[in-house]
Image (cartoon, rainbow, N blue to C red):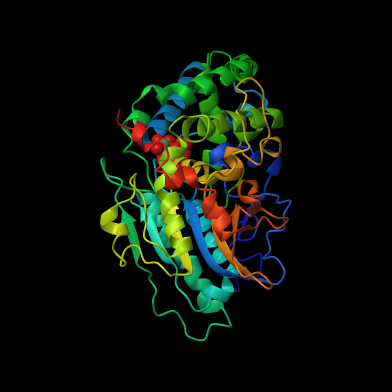
Amino acid sequence: GWNPGKPGHGSSGCDSVQNGYQCQPDISHFWGQYSPFFSVESSIPSEVPPRCSVTFANVLSRHGARDPTASKTAAYNATVQKIHANVQNYPGKYAFLKNYEYTLGADQLTLFGQQEMINSGLKFYERYEQLANHLTPFVRSASEDRVVESAENFTQGYHSAKLADKRNRRGDSTYPYPITVISEADGSNNTLNHGLCTNFEDGPDDSIASNAQKTWANVFVPAIQNRLNSDLQGANLTQTEVTYVMDLCPFNTVASNNGTISSFCSLFTEEEWHQYNYYETLNKYYGYSYGNPLGPTQGVGFANELIARLTNSAVDDETSTNHTLDDNPATFPLRRSLYADFSHDNDMTAIFSALGLYNGTGPLSNTTVTEAQDANGYSAAWTVPFAARAYFEKLRCAGNREEFVRVVINDRVLPLSQCGGDRYGRCTLSKFVNSLGFAKSDGLWDQCFT
Ligand SMILES: O=P(O)(O)O[C@@H]1[C@H](O)[C@@H](O)[C@H](O)[C@@H](O)[C@@H]1OP(=O)(O)O
């Protein structure tokens, strides 16, 4: 039976509801956006501060662990074929590779990823139980299969926790919860999936991230490339193919039902995983965050929706919001206490930047690793791992007339220095909203179409 309160529940070998993925954390927490969710260390306790209660929570979630995208899975398969066609001897820890058969699919959630999302729904219910035990979240999702399926799995976990909750005596007649799906079709206004800003999608800035990654790859990959091509006589792997072999570590790990660490992982050292993690972090920072002139602007639409929900006011946005949906209380209700939105890593990165989160980070070097602890808490694995979740919460605290806002990303409480965050990471609601001038003025959206 369900007792989601017990940390063991919903756990498979390496993964648990409370702590996420904890096997070989010295490497599995350094796989960039391909790290399975794990609870990130927080210098500010993530518990609700004393004499406070949560009055509002909006979770913004990535989908759970998936197979590689279609183009990447083809590239990975080709790389394995190339090795098998050219290499006869597979010494030592490469032995598994001789008969390794590439069987990964494309784009869809793995079973492990589905369980991650059920666990995320359980965790959200438990954290906000005082609201959740009598409320149903308003749920929205971008339309890609893996994202909608993640939303469904999240509600499955939330629903299960509700039925198991002794303090809920009314069952859960609203399940299955309606999910407002926002189309990702080309040209669609969608705050959970970028695509409209022409100069961002196809402009000169399109190569900023790949250039930064290439510069860093030229520093850290050659040593690995030499070792692999020497150990696997005949492989003759390119730099890019070396990164593909590294990708096969996380993707084969999350393809295993209980997240068993793949044999690909031990082909690389801890330091090399830190270098890989940084390679992926550069992709996000220079692709969708402050390292890209129009990156943060892609998150402005969601930021303005969040402001509307936090302040119970109409959405004021002329960027990527879908006004057909947002001006209709059936698809964009205000005055709800619980919201759940499901999206992608890149969009979440842009949204965090539009909200000024991590604005003390960078610019990130493309020749040496800056660890998350030294980057104002910023890395791909700390912010947008598989099943990543950001909690935007409002608190009412005894002795304070105004409500507070806190932001907790993968269990790490952000200091919110941009709005005078206190020792609990709290800003008053008005100071938080006043710090969002970039979003409220539609960011640099006017530069999207010049
Ligand atoms: O997770 P990434 O591989 O960095 O990005 C994924 C695809 O490669 C992109 O093409 C797509 O645009 C992203 O949305 C997608 O991110 P997910 O969060 O969907 O894995």
